[in-house]
Length: 270
Ligand code: FPP
Image (cartoon, rainbow, N blue to C red):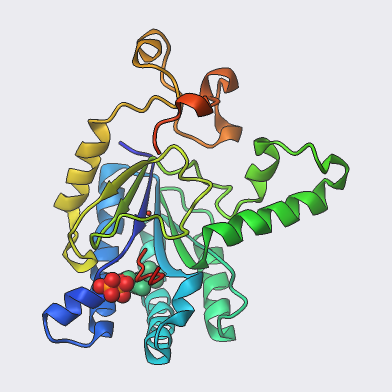
Protein backbone atom coordinates (compact mmCIF):
# COMPACT_ATOMS: atom_id res chain seq x y z
CA UNK A 1 0.00 0.00 0.00
CA UNK A 2 1.31 3.50 -0.70
CA UNK A 3 2.13 5.21 2.60
CA UNK A 4 1.32 8.68 1.33
CA UNK A 5 -1.36 9.62 -1.22
CA UNK A 6 -1.51 13.24 -2.44
CA UNK A 7 -4.51 14.51 -4.41
CA UNK A 8 -5.55 17.50 -6.48
CA UNK A 9 -9.34 17.69 -6.23
CA UNK A 10 -10.27 19.14 -9.59
CA UNK A 11 -13.52 19.27 -11.53
CA UNK A 12 -16.06 20.46 -8.98
CA UNK A 13 -17.13 23.41 -11.13
CA UNK A 14 -17.61 21.27 -14.25
CA UNK A 15 -19.52 18.64 -12.28
CA UNK A 16 -21.95 21.35 -11.16
CA UNK A 17 -22.18 22.92 -14.64
CA UNK A 18 -23.11 19.56 -16.17
CA UNK A 19 -26.08 19.54 -13.80
CA UNK A 20 -27.03 23.18 -14.40
CA UNK A 21 -26.05 23.98 -10.83
CA UNK A 22 -23.90 26.88 -9.58
CA UNK A 23 -20.15 26.06 -9.36
CA UNK A 24 -20.25 26.19 -5.57
CA UNK A 25 -22.68 23.24 -5.52
CA UNK A 26 -19.79 21.21 -6.93
CA UNK A 27 -17.53 22.22 -4.04
CA UNK A 28 -20.23 21.24 -1.58
CA UNK A 29 -20.59 17.86 -3.26
CA UNK A 30 -16.78 17.59 -3.30
CA UNK A 31 -16.74 17.46 0.49
CA UNK A 32 -18.51 14.08 0.26
CA UNK A 33 -15.63 12.76 -1.82
CA UNK A 34 -13.21 14.10 0.82
CA UNK A 35 -15.10 12.08 3.46
CA UNK A 36 -15.08 8.99 1.24
CA UNK A 37 -11.32 9.32 0.66
CA UNK A 38 -10.56 9.66 4.38
CA UNK A 39 -12.59 6.52 5.08
CA UNK A 40 -11.06 4.60 2.18
CA UNK A 41 -7.51 5.53 3.18
CA UNK A 42 -8.11 4.44 6.78
CA UNK A 43 -9.57 1.12 5.57
CA UNK A 44 -6.62 0.52 3.25
CA UNK A 45 -3.93 1.40 5.78
CA UNK A 46 -2.68 4.52 3.97
CA UNK A 47 -0.86 6.60 6.60
CA UNK A 48 -0.86 10.06 4.98
CA UNK A 49 -3.55 11.64 2.79
CA UNK A 50 -2.82 15.12 1.46
CA UNK A 51 -5.48 17.19 -0.34
CA UNK A 52 -4.98 20.41 -2.28
CA UNK A 53 -8.02 22.46 -1.19
CA UNK A 54 -7.01 25.99 -2.18
CA UNK A 55 -3.93 27.15 -4.04
CA UNK A 56 -2.16 30.48 -3.62
CA UNK A 57 -3.54 31.33 -7.08
CA UNK A 58 -7.19 30.57 -6.23
CA UNK A 59 -7.62 34.07 -4.77
CA UNK A 60 -8.04 35.11 -8.43
CA UNK A 61 -11.44 33.41 -8.59
CA UNK A 62 -14.65 35.45 -8.38
CA UNK A 63 -15.00 36.98 -4.91
CA UNK A 64 -18.25 35.08 -4.20
CA UNK A 65 -16.60 31.73 -4.94
CA UNK A 66 -13.58 32.53 -2.73
CA UNK A 67 -15.90 33.60 0.05
CA UNK A 68 -18.02 30.44 -0.36
CA UNK A 69 -14.90 28.27 -0.18
CA UNK A 70 -13.66 30.02 2.99
CA UNK A 71 -17.05 29.52 4.64
CA UNK A 72 -17.06 25.91 3.48
CA UNK A 73 -13.65 25.32 5.12
CA UNK A 74 -14.92 26.82 8.37
CA UNK A 75 -18.09 24.70 8.26
CA UNK A 76 -16.23 21.51 7.37
CA UNK A 77 -13.64 22.00 10.11
CA UNK A 78 -16.35 22.85 12.62
CA UNK A 79 -18.50 19.84 11.77
CA UNK A 80 -15.94 17.18 10.97
CA UNK A 81 -13.13 17.58 13.45
CA UNK A 82 -14.89 15.61 16.20
CA UNK A 83 -15.50 12.72 13.83
CA UNK A 84 -11.93 12.83 12.54
CA UNK A 85 -10.62 12.79 16.11
CA UNK A 86 -12.88 9.86 17.07
CA UNK A 87 -11.44 7.94 14.11
CA UNK A 88 -7.82 8.55 15.06
CA UNK A 89 -7.13 11.11 12.32
CA UNK A 90 -4.48 13.77 12.85
CA UNK A 91 -5.33 16.93 10.91
CA UNK A 92 -2.66 19.28 9.58
CA UNK A 93 -3.19 22.39 7.46
CA UNK A 94 -0.26 23.55 5.33
CA UNK A 95 0.07 26.85 3.52
CA UNK A 96 0.26 30.51 4.42
CA UNK A 97 -2.57 31.19 6.89
CA UNK A 98 -2.01 34.95 7.13
CA UNK A 99 -4.74 36.05 4.65
CA UNK A 100 -7.39 33.90 6.36
CA UNK A 101 -9.85 35.60 8.63
CA UNK A 102 -9.14 35.19 12.37
CA UNK A 103 -12.10 32.81 12.84
CA UNK A 104 -10.65 30.35 10.32
CA UNK A 105 -7.11 30.66 11.68
CA UNK A 106 -8.33 29.94 15.20
CA UNK A 107 -10.35 26.95 14.01
CA UNK A 108 -7.30 25.58 12.19
CA UNK A 109 -5.17 25.96 15.32
CA UNK A 110 -7.75 24.26 17.54
CA UNK A 111 -8.39 21.41 15.08
CA UNK A 112 -4.68 20.70 14.81
CA UNK A 113 -4.23 20.78 18.59
CA UNK A 114 -7.21 18.51 19.25
CA UNK A 115 -6.02 15.85 16.82
CA UNK A 116 -2.25 16.21 17.31
CA UNK A 117 -1.69 12.89 19.06
CA UNK A 118 -3.67 10.72 16.61
CA UNK A 119 -1.73 8.17 14.60
CA UNK A 120 -4.14 6.23 12.35
CA UNK A 121 -4.11 8.64 9.41
CA UNK A 122 -2.56 12.07 8.96
CA UNK A 123 -4.91 14.17 6.83
CA UNK A 124 -3.15 17.23 5.46
CA UNK A 125 -5.20 19.95 3.81
CA UNK A 126 -3.17 22.35 1.69
CA UNK A 127 -4.87 25.75 1.92
CA UNK A 128 -3.36 28.91 0.44
CA UNK A 129 -0.49 26.60 -0.41
CA UNK A 130 1.93 26.84 -3.31
CA UNK A 131 4.97 24.65 -3.90
CA UNK A 132 7.21 27.62 -4.69
CA UNK A 133 5.98 29.41 -1.58
CA UNK A 134 6.91 26.30 0.39
CA UNK A 135 10.43 26.07 -1.05
CA UNK A 136 11.03 29.80 -0.45
CA UNK A 137 9.76 29.80 3.13
CA UNK A 138 11.94 26.75 3.78
CA UNK A 139 15.01 28.44 2.25
CA UNK A 140 14.40 31.54 4.39
CA UNK A 141 14.00 29.51 7.57
CA UNK A 142 17.00 27.33 6.74
CA UNK A 143 19.27 30.31 6.13
CA UNK A 144 18.07 31.98 9.34
CA UNK A 145 18.76 28.78 11.29
CA UNK A 146 22.18 28.16 9.73
CA UNK A 147 23.67 31.38 8.34
CA UNK A 148 27.15 29.88 8.67
CA UNK A 149 26.34 27.37 5.89
CA UNK A 150 25.35 29.87 3.18
CA UNK A 151 26.70 28.60 -0.13
CA UNK A 152 26.98 25.03 1.19
CA UNK A 153 23.42 23.92 1.90
CA UNK A 154 22.44 20.39 0.93
CA UNK A 155 19.03 18.78 0.37
CA UNK A 156 19.07 17.42 3.91
CA UNK A 157 19.34 20.99 5.26
CA UNK A 158 16.09 22.15 3.65
CA UNK A 159 14.02 19.02 4.42
CA UNK A 160 13.17 19.91 8.06
CA UNK A 161 11.92 23.36 7.03
CA UNK A 162 9.46 22.27 4.34
CA UNK A 163 5.78 22.59 5.32
CA UNK A 164 5.28 18.81 5.29
CA UNK A 165 8.52 17.84 7.06
CA UNK A 166 6.47 15.50 9.26
CA UNK A 167 5.50 13.23 6.35
CA UNK A 168 7.33 10.96 3.93
CA UNK A 169 7.27 12.16 0.34
CA UNK A 170 4.07 11.13 -1.55
CA UNK A 171 4.20 7.69 -3.16
CA UNK A 172 1.33 8.49 -5.52
CA UNK A 173 -0.13 11.75 -6.72
CA UNK A 174 -3.68 11.65 -8.11
CA UNK A 175 -5.30 14.46 -10.04
CA UNK A 176 -8.94 14.32 -11.05
CA UNK A 177 -10.62 16.49 -13.67
CA UNK A 178 -8.57 15.64 -16.75
CA UNK A 179 -5.74 18.18 -16.52
CA UNK A 180 -2.22 16.80 -16.49
CA UNK A 181 -0.33 19.37 -14.44
CA UNK A 182 1.18 19.71 -10.97
CA UNK A 183 -0.10 23.31 -10.70
CA UNK A 184 2.45 24.37 -8.07
CA UNK A 185 1.43 21.64 -5.59
CA UNK A 186 4.21 19.87 -3.66
CA UNK A 187 6.88 20.58 -6.25
CA UNK A 188 9.88 19.57 -4.12
CA UNK A 189 8.24 16.53 -2.57
CA UNK A 190 6.85 15.07 -5.84
CA UNK A 191 10.28 14.57 -7.43
CA UNK A 192 10.01 10.74 -7.38
CA UNK A 193 6.25 10.34 -6.90
CA UNK A 194 4.21 8.24 -9.33
CA UNK A 195 1.76 10.53 -11.14
CA UNK A 196 -1.80 9.38 -11.90
CA UNK A 197 -4.33 11.44 -13.86
CA UNK A 198 -7.99 10.64 -14.37
CA UNK A 199 -10.75 12.33 -16.35
CA UNK A 200 -13.20 11.64 -13.52
CA UNK A 201 -14.38 14.85 -11.89
CA UNK A 202 -13.66 15.11 -8.15
CA UNK A 203 -17.31 14.53 -7.06
CA UNK A 204 -17.31 11.34 -9.20
CA UNK A 205 -14.11 9.92 -7.70
CA UNK A 206 -14.83 7.12 -5.20
CA UNK A 207 -13.20 4.23 -3.35
CA UNK A 208 -13.20 2.06 -6.49
CA UNK A 209 -11.45 4.87 -8.40
CA UNK A 210 -8.86 5.05 -5.62
CA UNK A 211 -8.33 1.30 -5.95
CA UNK A 212 -7.77 1.71 -9.69
CA UNK A 213 -5.13 4.38 -8.99
CA UNK A 214 -3.44 2.17 -6.41
CA UNK A 215 -3.47 -0.77 -8.84
CA UNK A 216 -1.72 1.44 -11.41
CA UNK A 217 0.83 2.43 -8.75
CA UNK A 218 1.52 -1.25 -8.03
CA UNK A 219 2.09 -1.97 -11.70
CA UNK A 220 4.92 0.56 -11.92
CA UNK A 221 8.56 -0.06 -11.22
CA UNK A 222 10.00 2.61 -8.93
CA UNK A 223 13.67 2.80 -9.89
CA UNK A 224 14.78 6.01 -8.15
CA UNK A 225 17.27 6.56 -10.97
CA UNK A 226 18.65 3.00 -10.98
CA UNK A 227 18.38 0.30 -13.65
CA UNK A 228 15.92 -2.61 -13.50
CA UNK A 229 18.87 -4.99 -13.09
CA UNK A 230 20.10 -3.09 -10.05
CA UNK A 231 16.64 -3.30 -8.52
CA UNK A 232 16.78 -7.09 -8.75
CA UNK A 233 20.10 -7.08 -6.89
CA UNK A 234 19.33 -4.62 -4.08
CA UNK A 235 16.26 -3.98 -1.95
CA UNK A 236 14.21 -1.04 -3.26
CA UNK A 237 14.77 2.36 -1.70
CA UNK A 238 12.23 3.29 0.92
CA UNK A 239 9.70 5.79 -0.35
CA UNK A 240 10.39 8.27 2.38
CA UNK A 241 11.98 11.68 2.52
CA UNK A 242 15.76 12.02 2.44
CA UNK A 243 16.14 12.29 6.17
CA UNK A 244 14.36 8.99 6.71
CA UNK A 245 16.16 6.96 4.09
CA UNK A 246 18.07 4.07 5.54
CA UNK A 247 20.76 3.91 2.91
CA UNK A 248 21.59 7.29 1.44
CA UNK A 249 24.04 5.81 -1.08
CA UNK A 250 21.26 3.75 -2.64
CA UNK A 251 18.56 6.28 -2.17
CA UNK A 252 20.28 9.22 -3.84
CA UNK A 253 18.73 9.51 -7.26
CA UNK A 254 21.02 9.59 -10.23
CA UNK A 255 19.86 12.71 -11.95
CA UNK A 256 21.15 11.52 -15.33
CA UNK A 257 18.94 8.48 -15.25
CA UNK A 258 16.09 9.91 -13.24
CA UNK A 259 12.72 8.84 -14.52
CA UNK A 260 10.77 11.44 -16.33
CA UNK A 261 9.78 13.21 -15.22
CA UNK A 262 -0.03 17.69 -10.70
CA UNK A 263 -5.32 21.15 -8.38
CA UNK A 264 -6.68 23.02 -11.32
CA UNK A 265 -6.51 24.88 -12.09
CA UNK A 266 -8.85 25.56 -12.08
CA UNK A 267 -7.37 25.34 -8.86
CA UNK A 268 -5.01 27.76 -10.36
CA UNK A 269 -6.67 28.45 -13.65
CA UNK A 270 -3.13 28.08 -14.96
C1 FPP B 1 -11.31 22.48 -7.79
O1 FPP B 1 -12.39 22.30 -8.64
C2 FPP B 1 -11.70 22.47 -6.36
C3 FPP B 1 -11.57 23.52 -5.48
C4 FPP B 1 -11.00 24.85 -5.83
C5 FPP B 1 -12.02 23.44 -4.07
C6 FPP B 1 -11.98 22.05 -3.47
C7 FPP B 1 -12.48 22.11 -2.09
C8 FPP B 1 -13.28 21.17 -1.55
C9 FPP B 1 -13.74 19.95 -2.24
C10 FPP B 1 -13.68 21.35 -0.13
C11 FPP B 1 -12.79 20.53 0.71
C12 FPP B 1 -12.75 21.02 2.07
C13 FPP B 1 -11.84 20.60 2.98
C14 FPP B 1 -11.79 21.26 4.33
C15 FPP B 1 -10.86 19.54 2.70
P1 FPP B 1 -12.66 23.43 -9.74
O2 FPP B 1 -13.52 24.49 -9.13
O3 FPP B 1 -11.35 23.91 -10.24
O4 FPP B 1 -13.42 22.63 -10.85
P2 FPP B 1 -13.43 22.97 -12.42
O5 FPP B 1 -12.04 22.71 -12.90
O6 FPP B 1 -14.41 22.00 -12.96
O7 FPP B 1 -13.86 24.39 -12.58
